[in-house]
Amino acid sequence: MKKILLKDSEKARILIRAANWVGDAIMTTPVVRAVRKNYPKARITVLAKPWVIPVYENNPYIDEIMVYDNGGRHKKGMGVLRLSQDIRKAGFDLAILMQNAFEAALLAFLAGIPERAGYNTDARTLLLNRSVPMNPALKKKHLIAYYIGIIEGVGMRPDGMDQDLMISDQDCHFAGQLLHEQGLGHGKPVIGINPGATGGTAKRWFPERYAELCRLLANRYQTKILVFGGPADHDLGEKIAGMAAGSCINIAGRTGLSQAFALIRACDLFVTNDSGLMHAAAALGTRQAALIGSTDPVATAPFSDRSTMVRMPVPCSPCLKKECPVDHKCMDLIGVDRVFQICKSILDNNTSTDSNGETNPV
Picture 1 (cartoon, helix red, strand yellow):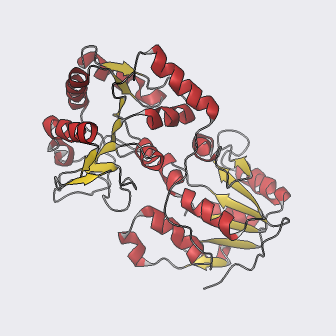
Picture 2: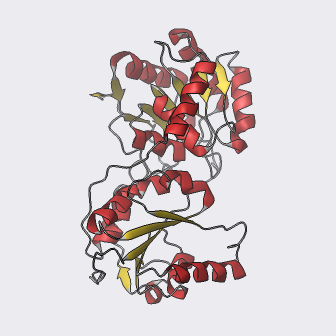
């Protein structure tokens, strides 16, 4: 083990290279907190691409966010050199790389950061002077443990696996105002669904089943269901709202990510595919039913005892593919009635039901 030599002081400057996906970024927050606990006096900066910045912008363990403007100033080619120069000017003493890509190590190397820590994957060993060997056992554990393994591998003390996702007062106000305008709450449960997922359709439950679930929930609880998602999910939300015959309010594409976080925290129940918003709900402690098919039910499960994984094991799952090349059985076998019963159990009894049908208090 090559331990970090940097000593804690007000002059110490630490750069944490963020993961590129919202869910992964949320799962790195225990590392951010641990770095702060190891270096309470240091100035900590997170380097992040624009779309994951809301994950970090209210985090009390971070002093600064540096934007990786990959669509502009830091675009591929000369932009990588400009970014390395920007990093160099900041005078960092230590880089901790949550992202495993070769480019992340190259940037830290070109920026002349004296200590560069990360896993020795993707031919990065020569670029990292605090190279952490990949422990095969971590591949069988949750991704949070995988990220924590980076700092443990260079001698830092971890600080548990709880995730941090903070909501600003402004976003809380936005969420409260939207719910008020839509007539939601007022003694009735606030329910959200997230029918989208980046990276292909393999992770998605079927729109017509989400629509039927919304009709059942809206009828039972005399409310309307919020349909979450980004701009790319707006048409999907409209399709589901149309099939659900007045049972839904489509807000996909109508909120920023931080506003979506605030609305998820306000939900009494969140039904979602494996996605960044699933991990947001887990971090926020929102009760949720997470529909899991093609993805790893261990490594990327929602890390929360208030989350229920709904999964039907099939021989080809987890395949980790973007599109199902066969029959999409992993999702097809998840029936509407089963999900509805789990939702009722969560809302009526303050319990969650795991994938084996057992109930656990939340």
